Length: 496
Image 1 (cartoon, rainbow, N blue to C red):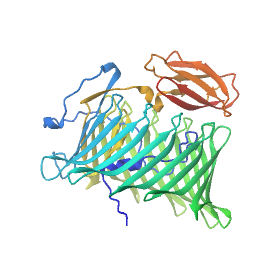
Image 2 (cartoon, rainbow, N blue to C red):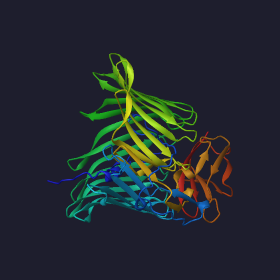
Image 3 (cartoon, one colour):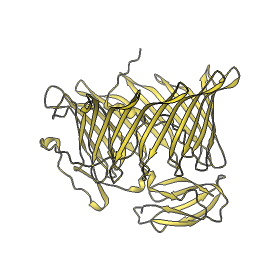
Image 4 (cartoon, rainbow, N blue to C red):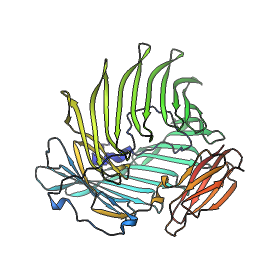
């Protein structure tokens, strides 16, 4: 029988997001247990007592084109006191992409011992190509897990594979393959599971779109008896911004579609979720199940996330998250509370501090008991440049401190998907494009295509922000292709 063990620091990679790549459609919010992907605050850690822990600052590049990156994180348990039990260190390439991530632990001595090692590679556009995780066993590095990804010319992921090392060979674990039509829309998603050295079909997802490029239905087929069998149908309605208003799921039973679940969502004028209701089909009628509601501050940050359950013909509080931010929109704390009959009861809290660039300096996990907050071990995120650092997730940790003044790397903002801005979207007369300067002092070029892939407009960008007259275009959905000497990105634009 195959046996797979779980390696704690490596498991952060298992959370890799494998949902269908569908920027045209925002699904109904269904689970508040996810984490807010925003920001944190700054207070420099005082841990400078061991020179061997803190590499000397390497000033390699000009500060005008570079940013400090953390290279070492020290982790503490409640039982370890002021002595860190785990150290996570990194190396980067000149563009700030993580090349290696080493996790070390202390046992009964003050000597750091290897625990796990992770290695990454990227293509010229900064897309993540390969990942190799290794465990330290018998004084040598042993394979644990690997992942590979590939992309099309638009930067869409088209293939993703994960394999697990089984003593002498790589065993297949999971495979996803996306296909995109000529309009850049994802028209199929194939998932396969692994049986030792073989890939075995699991499910096939086939969406359909309206004229705006929004998903209106998705058919799921499952692999059974060496053939595809229809299993589930999801039907959506959307608003003009592509937000999903209703989502009906039906299962194929006895040669007919049978209702299963229904989601109903509301949004504010900015497209933020305000609420969503989930219902289940029982005894030929819809029965309420869960209700989620969210509130935001003026900057669009989550302030509260409330979950309620349907009980006794009424909504009953279940749990909620409360968030606090600083003036730079860094999240200072996240507090989770449970409803205890008639009042909210604190459960746990995460607290973070940052530097001026939005990099985490410290994280702390606290548990509520005896009327106060107390140190306890939990799961903490690390933030880099105001974003969750997806390549590290600290588990079973009371607190950590990050050294963010040891590595200086050159950065090119245009490598990020969010570096190219198109606004307002939808637009009626003028749409503005903001693009950072490329390494050749060019701002790139822009081409617009309709849903039939016909060229509509082409423009060379000569400023950081360029206005484009779209008043002569017919209302509908267009694809905007941005290109410079480093990358190509495709965005969607809606003409009112």
